[in-house]
Image (cartoon, rainbow, N blue to C red; front, side, top):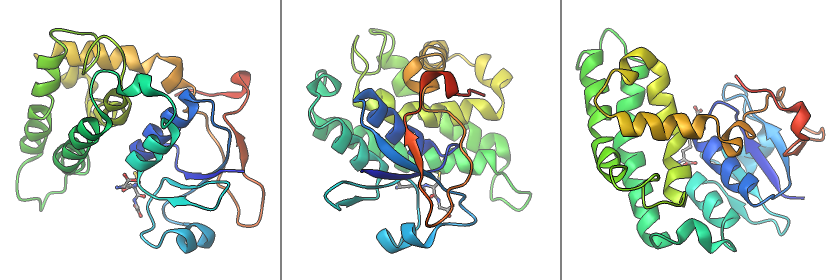
Length: 217
Ligand SMILES: N[C@@H](CCC(=O)N[C@@H](CS)C(=O)NCC(=O)O)C(=O)O
């Protein structure tokens, strides 16, 4: 069976789980604690980040966007508004610019080079392009949700969650609405179930679980 090393709260793992879930891909989910990574995961991928997917055939994929592409390979609908190459480029650019600002904002330390609001503004500026795009459609690339929407949504959620009151009061109201839509979408809520830490040598969770066992918070 395909194995997914995942961490519930990790936005990279969320995007991977959403892509897998959208295709009904069944996996053995191994819930990882970042401070206690299982040796079997590190054997597969030395860089020690989640998510890591090992296919039935033994192929190891340890980049979240690549896991998404693997999961969505036979469903063109996620690439109907822009090619996979173009959406990968947009998602990679977003990861490279937005995420470092979000981390610097969320985990701001007194010794940081800039005050916390600086990083918040830098991250927020990355959303201007999305605000513009959402002026003419319900999703980032058109009226159908795309690979890019799935890829970036968990990160925008993470940013908004740091201070939701501040986020809601910002002029980027279309991004706020887009995020609110995703937060209640079953594709997102369905991948947020809680699992206890996987123990080396044991069987992981059959995932996705039955609907009635999912917990959302
Ligand atoms: N480029 C990787 C990044 C994944 C990543 O950084 N995940 C974080 C958790 S959200 C992680 O595993 N960090 C390792 C650690 O904190 O030890 C991907 O897209 O899969």
